[in-house]
Length: 53
Image (cartoon, rainbow, N blue to C red):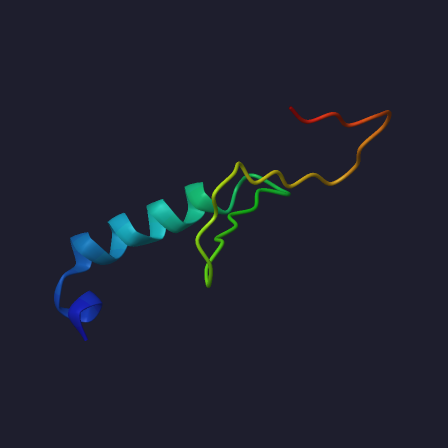
């Protein structure tokens, strides 16, 4: 309803969504449920050794 009543807001939202989705492969991850006491690393493809510390 708000977007029907506010065409300018609707257009701004369309623009934001278009910009948010124009990057293929972009991902947003959220970690929930536990306190993390160290860095969190997420990777798609890893080649070679990983060393921490």
